Length: 186
Ligand code: K2U
Ligand code: NI
Image (cartoon, rainbow, N blue to C red; front, side, top):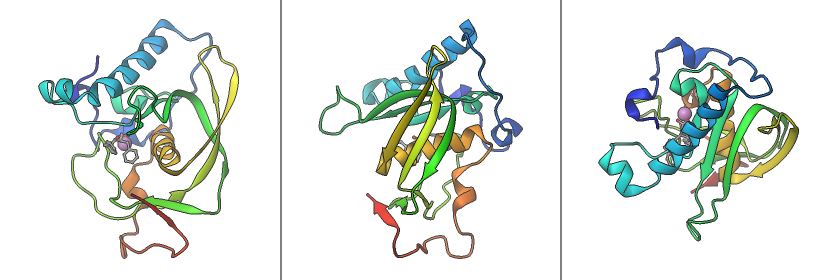
């Protein structure tokens, strides 16, 4: 299980590296990495456990954020209507975004990051719909199409694998300026 002490913070060079491709068959270390990252997300969304262990809630966690410079990220987007059926629960291995919609989207509250302690205000414009090619645990290539909030989360995590942080995308001069066609997600 990871705790906040295990989360690498902004300034550590690992967050600015491009992760290494994950090799198959998966090593035991990579299987454990995937399990531990997803476990963090599950436990961080359990209010009692998160409070007891001082976990920041997360809907995504990328391997570089726990100091492993590899192309692997976990995503757990809860479904407010049915806690037992998350909107998206997936481990993305070697993910590549192969299609981006022209339509942009941004979260109305901006973004945060478990690896960035400071609050960086501003909109983070991203694609509203994406197609991701990734490898599953057996090394088979899979395709995932997501839109809206799950797409925002996947892009945030895939950015981590390529050494990018959310505030890189905030317009420094006009942080709250958005193209009028951008979908604002609350
Ligand atoms: O990668 C991380 O640091 C995890 C982020 C993921 C994130 C995705 C999209 C937009 C913002 C952040 C954490 O989940 S940040 C905390 C959080 C928790 C619940 C909902 C939104 C953000
Ligand atoms: Ni992050």
